[in-house]
Image (cartoon, rainbow over all chains, first blue to last red):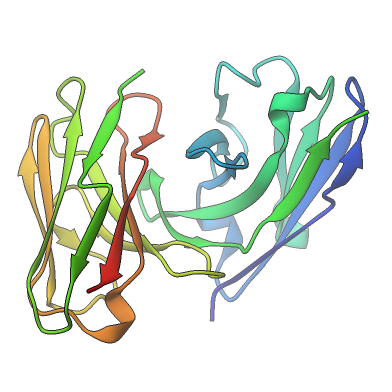
Length: 120
Length: 106
C-alpha cells in the first residue's frame, strides 16, 4: 500500500535552516509528481511546492520562493524540502503528498506530516 | 490568488441524512476543483477531483458537482465515519484550499 512518511521537522531559530525528508513506498515513485503542503497553527492549508517525476519541473509558492528548494531522489524513493532563511510564519505541519497520474496538484495520498517550529 | 470560500463552516446532521457542502471560488476555476476529507488525527483523503470524478475507492454516496465558481459536495446518506472536516482545493492557478466545513453529528 502507498505510504508517505515525513521526517526532519523540529525547532529552529529564525534565519536558520532545516531539511525535510519524505520516504515513499508502495508505488513507482518516479512516475508521480510530488508536493509539499503545509498547515500553520490555526490556519488553512497552503501548497508550498511541487516537483515532476523526473525533477525537470519544480515550482514554489510566492511565500517561499528563493528560500525553499524541493528535490527528489528516485533511486531512494525520497522527496526533500530544503528550507533556508526560516521565518516565524513558516511554522507549520509539513505534509508530503502524491499527485494523481497526469494531474500534478490533485493529491491522492498524504503523509501524516512533520512539525516545523521557527522560534527564538 | 484564487480564494475558495466554503459554507457552512459547520454542518450538524444525523446519520442517514443528506449532506450538501458548498465551495465558491473568487474567480472561475473551470472544473479544476477537488474535495478532501480529513478525520481527526488522520491525513486528508481525496474524495473528488475535477469537480465530479470520484477518487479510487471512494464510496458512491459521495458526489461532486459544479463548474466555474460554484461547487457542491453531496453525501447522499451519512454514515458515522463521514463526520469529519471537508475542504475544497482548486488547481486552475496556483493551488489553494478552502478553510473547510466541519460535518458534525447532531
